[in-house]
Length: 280
Image 1 (cartoon, rainbow, N blue to C red):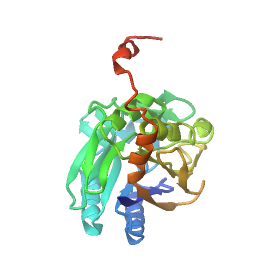
Image 2: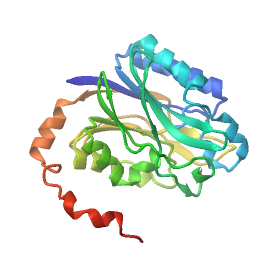
Image 3: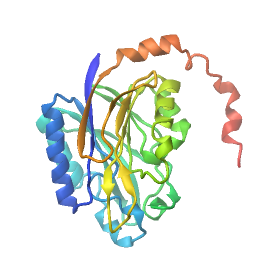
């Protein structure tokens, strides 16, 4: 089965309503190009505020049934697409998560993932100031276009996350991100193809673009891409432009690759117990 998928990278240093409106337009463009499933970038509804530590940003968090996700449910239903929506989640006053929901084409919410690994490192990733570590495990979502897994940004540095969603049957894994060129650029096209190969799934990496001053002068370098289960980057976006990147994802390749490289068969989980006990 071939699924037409799309990811959206965009400059989002805008007031929330403007950022949401901009992405609604870009989602419409993806749908017009035949996309059946679309994923947005991390915290798509405005600037990447963890570049600073400022409690005023807590006010931008919303519950799952808040206006942003509710509008995206309408957009998914309008276009008849599966839509993955990262957002700043308000669980209760003082408890916030970096989350994403998967919305079916009828507008229903299939499920939610909360980012598990939370960075707190310069030059502009002060996320522990805002986000509680996720507590929903590593779910995989059954949708009308296949089984979707989620890895949010910093999670990609931990191969255990990719392995978990792979073992649960993920076919297409989205990694909505916000990453700047001064820190992890050299890892951007290294880690995720490795995850795709090790687990035999498709992965789509999404990054925002531009400089979001005055919050930060570091550049988000775009370069969103789709990678197949052989680790080949088959579709790639620009470094500095808003872009709807559309790719035909052949899910049958998963079976071909897994039947060649029997990594899942040849695992020895009974020998891995000490990995959860070893401490640095």
